[in-house]
Image (cartoon, rainbow, N blue to C red; front, side, top):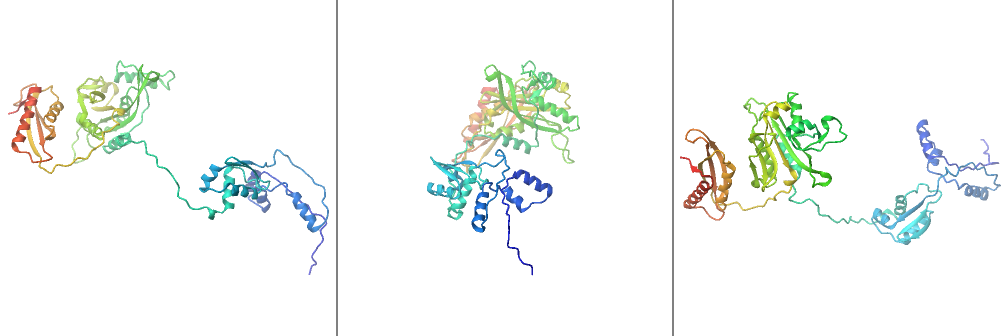
Length: 471
């Protein structure tokens, strides 16, 4: 059996500091992490060698030798001075710890503590270089205080009423409706070709860019039609003949009254062309017409709750067909246009076939009418049909509007279901077949009352439009 050696003449005590970043990088390169590397990475104190030497002398005896110091103060770790705020401590822990306890915990951790108003200045001890920021102190206070001593308290949060009003109509909702109707959203440049824009808006001044991307993108758009029609041409050139697209975005109109001389309006516009339906063996190939687009547009307007206040008026627009277009008015204010692209413009833009467009000023429609519930009548409704002959230039919408005014209390529905021109109707006139739905919410209408309301309606049409009942 070997004899254990019990004598030791020299003991080397060292306190080393190496950059943790360098140690980690070297460990990754060498794929080796030693116990000493881990200790050095954790910031071993460089000032504890004196304490270690004293303990060796006191316990084992002997004498201390010379000290060899090779260091650079600039690279040695510094003791961090950290401010711990009462508000931060309470917010992160979710519990109030007394000031005396906080001070005591920090001092027990070895920190040099200076108390202030609702805060503490703590200098981290030399052996705790992991204390660098305020959150480190919060963590240590919570750990020493005891996580089990922190009660579970529900978060106190005040609810803030949202700014969204019930009357606000989201543009996203309208986009969803158009998507459901087969439209696809596109995004086009706000910079357009001034020559093309002048074809669509002849004589209208546009904002020209001083440093454009290219000559074809040197003007700010006056409407969304320029980009949409270019998109249609692009798709038609790639054998996509049935196109339904829409876009929302700003137009830029020179206006001396607006800031910087430019008025920016949020617009909603759309284009359709080609067949009414996707190709199918059971469906005839029918090209879209004015009423297809008008129907889609009325669906959008119906979401706003203002469809009954909207009026389509025959009004000229240089970009639209004079006989198949209309201006859109809301309470007497024009908010947009709808119609077939002018044949001459179609030729200049190389559009293939009939193309229809619409455009609306969205901000004038975004404030919707909030729906209100009303009682459904338990009494039967009565339908009466009349056919009136009026001059060709009399809009059918005016006829329907007059019928609604006359029977405001009893007429609950007015519908145009037929338009006839031909044998039996003089040239320059047309016959309009109108259905009147009469109903009362409190009682069943008598035949005499129904007849009186219908007669009153016919008389009003005769007086205002010189209409006559068709034989």
